[in-house]
Length: 298
Image (tube, rainbow, N blue to C red; front, side, top):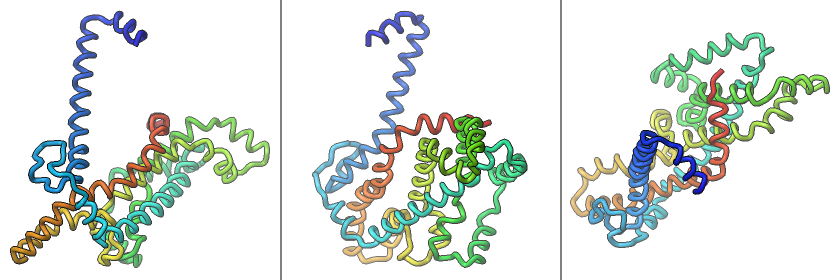
């Protein structure tokens, strides 16, 4: 506090006004972002969300929403499927990204510029939905786990970030020393590069994990078997699809289902967010170092 006070004494009036306005805007943005999160948490413990209005306090505390979630069998099937898709997809994506980023980071790789150009082209042009669907069908991957994991298994943007990290944080002198000791590229990658790249691996891994966990469009297009649906599709059914089905039911059944849906919708959002919320604190310390160093494109 003493240091900050002395620092602000050297500021002019214009700088002080800027700091005050900047601080006010940051607080407003923080409140705008925080309010919906707190409202969802509060509503998930409320017996009736219609009486809450904009309040952050539950009208009547209740765990009925969470009990309804735990009794809904499809949610747990979707939960297990999403965990499998997230774990397998993240592992495959990280493997492909490292295998692509490492050779492109080597200055002695002859086809480096050509391969990099090919990768960059895919960032601006894609085959489109229908050709991608036909390719997946031709490969026999429809209604299988591979249709969810393989088509988007590597992000060129993440690969460029990791390639830049390898280029800037792994000195060429290490490779020269390793060569003198008889080390090849594969041994150099596994023995030296990867152990020194924990920050970027953690950050890129989190990007892939969150992307796989929240992904629903691929499952919507490629899956028809309910036993293979990820949690995002089950959530979509609860929040959107079931509302349309209520119109074709009798009044009592419709009201019962509507009440159950209202109880579940906030609780299921909290339950579905838990894996990402649990992973983030373990990776957060790597974010500044991993993203800032890797994001400087070269």
